[in-house]
Image (cartoon, rainbow, N blue to C red):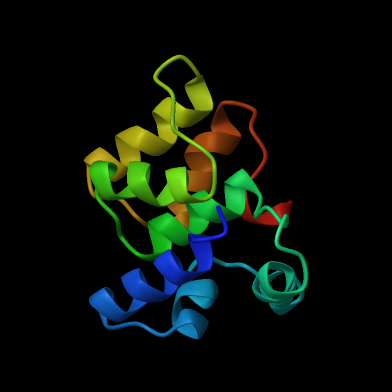
Length: 117
């Protein structure tokens, strides 16, 4: 997990995007962005929320294998047993990375949006 920020930075570089662009596309507001970025530097035990990690992975347009590795760095995983995770996984498998589209699908099943936590 302490490696998550370096992985995020590395993937941003590979995708040719800045972290600002990725946080904006992930619909993570500046307050949460600053909390995430400063959290890792101020507290080595800081842990990004699962939903924010998923939103960042979607913003980076990671395929399912890349998303699994990315989430693992944050200490999370997508499970086939949970409907929330299946919704997210199905969108990734179908290369639907738009945050609003994923959030609508989650909302239709009674889940909260990724970016309001």
